[in-house]
Length: 302
Image (cartoon, rainbow, N blue to C red):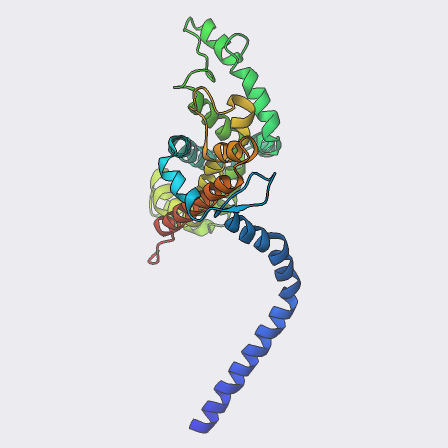
């Protein structure tokens, strides 16, 4: 019996190895493309972080100089602070707006497809176009926002020219542009929840809020984790809005991490330092993603 069991395990291992080899054979073209078009570029970018390189001359080895420079670069820490503040405004608001829209769109109402289309239209618009349109909406003299304030007898505001209001104004534009995309993700999560769970809660006399908080929200945790991670990654990589609407101003108030990397790479031609900050940004996003996954992972006992 023992000999027979050993032979069965060996046959099982052999079978798994054959299947692994077959899978690796089919995946090898994709793996080769991945290495050629992504892996080599990432490896070269990491090599550049240890060099001074202006693109006009060959890279010059600098060791850890680029990494040490980060600690004394005030504009780097300003860009990190601006990006964190933007994320704190953008991520919670886009999650709440997306979830609220999804809950409303999940109800059986007439003309539902029209509301879905209206929520998703901004998602299809290019960031450049959105930025230009909202630039004129925020215009201090001819913008709609200040026109409404004048009608109400309130003082007007230079939304993009004021250090206090410029960053929140960009966060509002990001929210308007992207909440429809996250609403679609939440809507898919809502429609995956079995209807009989809501029916059982209704039979037990649970109110709408208790059904939502004790049944719907716990089952939406995987979707919530996905949306939060995607929103945080998008917030830490925000570039287009800053480029089009404020150019990092006023006085660095909207100079985000990605925009500062762009300035160092393509304005100052400090490729080594820009690559170093890119890897720092990658490390920050990786740590945030791991933390969010641990916090929002589905409850095992549900």
